[in-house]
Amino acid sequence: MIRRVAIVGYAQSHHQHNMQKTREDMVFEVCKEALHHAGILREDLDTVITASTDFLDGRTISNVFLSMAVGAFLKDESKVEEDGTFALYYALMRILAGTHDVALIEAHTQGSTFNPHQVACYTLDPLFDRQIGVLNDIAAAAIQARMYMNRYNVSEEHLAMVAVKNITNASENSYAHRKMPDVTVEEVMSSKIFCDPIRELTMSPISDGACALILASEERAKEITDKPVWIEGVGSCQDPYLRDRNIHNLDSLQRAARTAYKIAGVKEPFSELDVAEVSEKFAHEELMIYEALGLCQEGQGKNLIERGTTRRDGEMPVNPSGGALGADPVCATGLIRVIEAAKQIRGEAGGYQVPHVRRALAHGQFGICAQKNAIFILGGNGS
Image 1 (cartoon, one colour):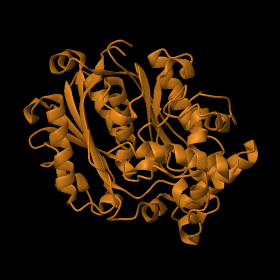
Image 2 (cartoon, helix red, strand yellow; image 1 turned 90 degrees about the vertical axis):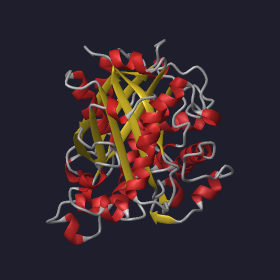
Image 3 (cartoon, rainbow, N blue to C red; image 1 turned 120 degrees about the horizontal axis):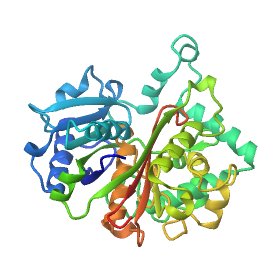
Image 4 (cartoon, rainbow, N blue to C red; image 1 turned 30 degrees about the horizontal axis):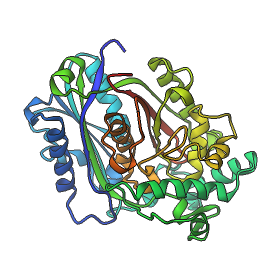
């Protein structure tokens, strides 16, 4: 990248179901905390970008009601639909363009207000799929899981092992929603089934939550903090509509990762990355994500989970924070992954800190069967 850009501050809520706060209060608190974490004032911001959807917020042009809460009063302000990593991408471009130096990015969803699984139905073809009423995001994920499992001889136990890893990791994360420190493979496999093989504990919980992150140009970043987390590479791509794509792999994620790796100069992701924070809405997706990110060969994701490679103490830790299976405030989930990756680099992850993290990957997604994907490669001063 011609102009270096760094993460200089961040904050997130304590994600939970049915948070007893208004959306405005929830957002205000994380934005205020992010500014405090960076050690700057609202007056230092040049631009503010929010991420949500009108469907999930339950009102049209929903960002207009949050302008005060996010500190955008008399500021350049914009909104990006869906996942917060896309808003981060937009903010990054604004700084790289030289039009702004400091940006605040905020993302949120209160899943208890409007069920995200019901809302997801509105992304389906309105003339066919939506009218029939059979397909939804869970049913589509079940089809994807079975296609992937049958193709590569993946068992339900493999999915349960992913769930156990992430849910156990989440128990060390004070911000996570789902905390089950003693969860077992048997418990996961006996949890309520929604659409075979998707079970309650192999899919993300419906969460309320918000987060905020502050970006700065190299000049301002060095003035703000002595621990900047640099954005070294970025990539984004999306697949066609559900019926027009192969869902047994994640093509758009693979392309996004390749772009990010090229920009960051990453040639061997397994050996060059120290940790990855990925948005796995369903347990089977994490195995597919391993493969799309080039951490293993196609169809070999199950080997990484079997060997414990992606455990917090493994060779390539994935989701030490618990990932989306630990908390999923939909539009904030990807941006939370960026924050969690930055925390690992700065050594601020507490009980789930991975030792000696110099370079990390963060992933956000949106859409049925992980249709849209964004990748960020982050590095500290020593990377």
